[in-house]
Picture 1 (spheres, rainbow, N blue to C red):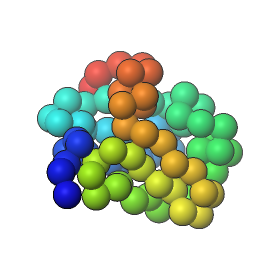
Picture 2 (cartoon, rainbow, N blue to C red):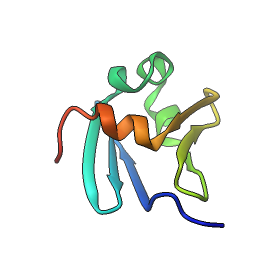
Picture 3 (cartoon, rainbow, N blue to C red):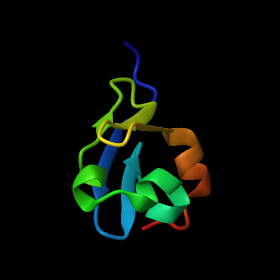
Amino acid sequence: MNKFHEVIVDTDSTALHLTVDGQAYHLRWDECSPRLAKATAAQRGHLEVSPSGYGIHWPEIDEDLAIAPLIRQASGVE
């Protein structure tokens, strides 16, 4: 399987932190999605990056987000 992106994901109480192909981004939870904004910290922390690096899945809240749109809307680079 070809990798679309190399992705490292970290979460905290206020934001989703992504490192995509070596570039760092962060998005407040309300910038990501309404479901993530309402989710608990435990739900936000339980995520799966797709094997291709194309997206992120949060199984406990049934949310899927693609990496490319997330990095386009990122509020700033860390």
